[in-house]
Each structure stands twice: as structure tokens, then as C-alpha cells.
Image (cartoon, rainbow, N blue to C red; front, side, top):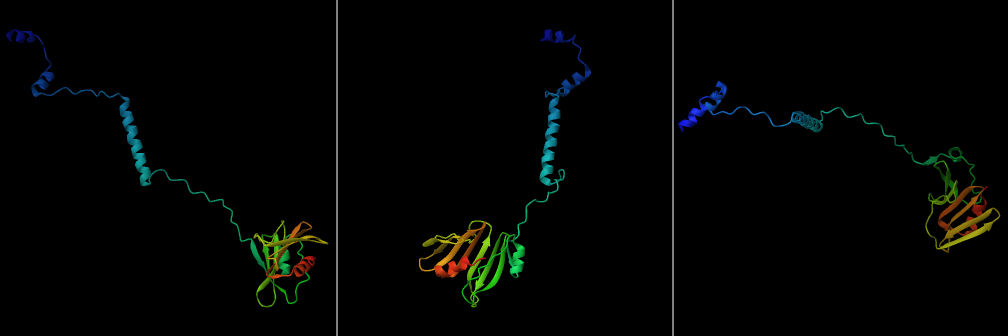
Length: 202
């Protein structure tokens, strides 16, 4: 043991190191993390703060909402006060049936989209008994049900298609001079009566 002590006698130890040894403290260690780790840590903190700011509503202001570009569509069904007003609402010359059962008079005029004219007739009871339409297209009746009975009759002005239940005719449709026509009876008519009304459209 004495020999070991003599071996250390020539070793000079700095005073601060000796003091740390006596006090049992270790010298501070340098961080083993690369230098760029500090920058990465700062970046992570910045991202975290930014995320928190978004959730708290304190981030950069959101862009102002842009107005919608939707197109407002009005009601295509427009009532008219009389036949003159209806004529002004459509682009074609209105023709009306001239031969109708006695007592039937117009009760309402309507323009539909500016491409179809409708005139409703009553028999004086206040109920609509006949709806007449003319306008652009192939079938302006608006009736798409399947009828039990259908017949096409050739007339001097072209074919007229009749539809009904086999006892009465409820609908007549035809096309002439590039326009479509229809006569619809709610109570039903004889084939002769509705054909006469259709052929009287001038």
C-alpha cells in the first residue's frame, strides 16, 4: 500500500478538481445531443404554439366568405288578368277554341314559363270543366297517365289523339304549325264534342 501512495505523490491535481473530488461532485458533462437538436426543439415548440393558436381562434384571420353564385329561379307559373295580358307573356300568337258547349266561359289565364299559355273554362257552376293549353313542345297537356282507351283521328288539320276510359274522352292532344295543343275535360266529353272543339282552334 505504501508503494502505491508513493506512486501518486508526483501527480499534480488542479485545486478545483481536488475540491470536487473532496466534495464528491462530478464535472459538468457536455450534452451529447447534436447541435441541430436544439433547433428542432424550438421548431417543435413553435408548431405546438401555432396549433394551439388555431384551436383558440387567434391564428391569422380567415379569408372573408365569398358570396354565393347561385341563380334564383322564380315561379314559372304566372297568372294573367285577361287574354291580352296572357298574349304579352308568351312569344306566339294565342289561338282559342271557338266551338265549345253553351255556357262555357274563360275563368283563368296563366302563362307557364313564357312558353305555354293556359286558359281554364267553367260552365257557370264555378268548377273548372275544361283546360286548354297551347305552346312549344310535343305534348303540353301535362298528363302522363296510361288511359284505358286511346284513338288517333285524322282531321283536315292533322291527327288528333283522344284518350279516355272507353266511355268518355278526357283528353285531346295534337300538333300543328310547330305548336302543341291540348284540351282536357275533367268530367269527360263525347269524342264528337272534343274533336269539334279541337278543330275550332283558329
